[in-house]
Structure formats: C-alpha cells, structure tokens
Image (cartoon, rainbow, N blue to C red; front, side, top):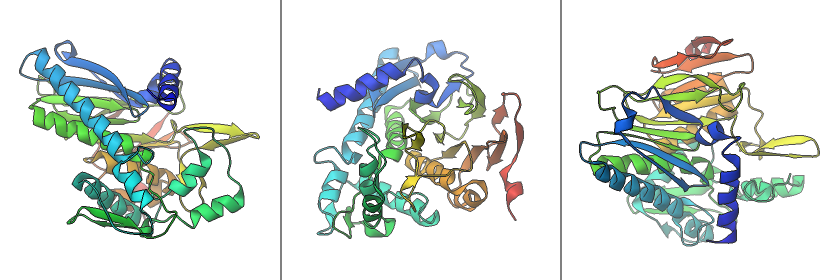
Length: 359
C-alpha cells in the first residue's frame, strides 16, 4: 500500500464517527426483512462502500455478487482516475493537444454522457477542470490559488476542448495542458458499475452506497421498493430530512453540504467549484439530491444544479428526465419531477413543487 493510499484510508477511518452521514450521504431505511439480506462493507474511492443484496440462492451466492460488485467499483476507479498510471483518463490527459487516444468503450460512453450534461448546463458542470482542481489541491495540501495562476488554468479548461468518438472508442483534448478530472462523478460511475454487476449476478434486489451516491436495483423480497434517507443539511451529522422511495431503481446523488472544504485566512473554501470562475461556487441552495437512471449523470447534474440554482436547473433536469430535492437556506424543500415517493420527516421545513418557480 502506497503512503498516499494509506493517508487516504486513514482519513476515511478517522472521519467515520463524526461524519457517518456525510460518508453515506443517503442511506436505505424502512428495512423490514433486511436480516435475510446479505450485508457487505468495503473501502474504495476514499470512502466506505456499503451493500445490501438479495438473491434466491444461498448467502454464499450473495457474497460472490457483493465481491463482484466491489471489483467492478475498483475497476471503475482504476479506469477513470486521472492520477492512476495508465488509466484511460491519465492516458488521455497525457496526450492532450496531440493525438486521439483509444479508450475503453465504457469510458467513451461515459465521456459522451458527461459532455451532454456540460453542454445542456452551459458549462455549470465541466469534466475538463483538472488544471484548476490541481491548483486547489483539495485531496492533498489545499490552498487558495493566486489569481494569475487561476486565470491561466481556466484558459486551459472548457468542455469544448474534449472530443469523443464512441464509434471508435477514442477521445482527444484539443489543447496542450488541458486535462479531465472525473473525481466529482467517480462514485456515481461506481454505482453504475455495481448495478450492472448486480444484473449480471442474477440478484432480485440490491442497494449500494458509495459516499454521497446510492444505487438501487430491483426490489425487496416482499416486492416493495427500496427507500433511502436524505440528510438534513441544517441538522447534525445524523439528522434526516426525509425518505425517498425508488420503485424505478437508478442512482441518487447529494451535492452541497458534504463537499470537502478547508479554511484559509478566515475564508471557507468548498471543493464545489464554479467552472466559470474556478472558485468555490456561490450556491443559492444548501443541497440538492438528484435521481437519474445513470449514476455518473446524476452526480454531474447534482453539481450543475448547485451552481445554477433552482430555477435555472429545472430545464436541465427536464432534459435528462431527472428528479431532484432542493434544500434552501430559508428551510424550504423544493421538489422537481416524479418524486412523489419523497416523504418529509424533519420539522420546521415547508414543502412545495419547484415547478411553481418556472415562468
């Protein structure tokens, strides 16, 4: 185990007691009969990975399915991390400004989907922020970049620099010094890989939590849908805002309250950056939880919605057939989309449909 890997694992373990809900972000609830399921916990993507699986076979089959899903998550991290040697993203970044690079078909499809979100959001989500995120260095020794350095880095960013050919499974970055950083959507992509593994394993139902992302497949043994709890960003570490039922499966991602941050010279700096400025986004909402059938898209949409605010997010969510739960500083909960399964349990909040804000 490398020193850097050990440092990250130590950080995860030290933070679990204080940030249990921050690690999980949303968790499954209403678990009747869960004692008949198979529980598995592992560490990947710098967080805990928790699974509950159901199968018509013995627990040993469920164990094999859990191990296969964990392997799929680890493979996703190895393939998509910009700082992993020979990963698709590291190889693509190294070739920036030169030639088209052959990548795995799954990576090409993922980059295409993320480019769609970038275009439709007007750049509120941008996968090409590596020059900027490297300056902030949130995963290491974070610091506020100098303005001239930040502007230089921003000149190398822009989703328009990324070109993808899914037919040939190739991609390229137009400019030297450009780079892709998929860290913000990595856990969503990990959920996608796990859910696909569940399908191939023949499970009847399964749920996986990777940090702020939760993926749902199938149903409980009694035929009922899984549900997840959404954290209250104005409460303590264990406060629950409400529960959200997911008969359609898919992935939910929470952005906002749990973003890593640091304080320098009295200024709190969140790692949720506005791609237009390269600085922490001045978010008009405290948090947003987004459902979409694709986990990577869910994660990208959640970050874009934090940058855009509620009203400007609605056309974006509509385009991707996504649902969302917004929490505002005024203790309003705004719902968008087919999320009638959301039930508010926290006190002191008002609840209404976000569509009412549309002109």
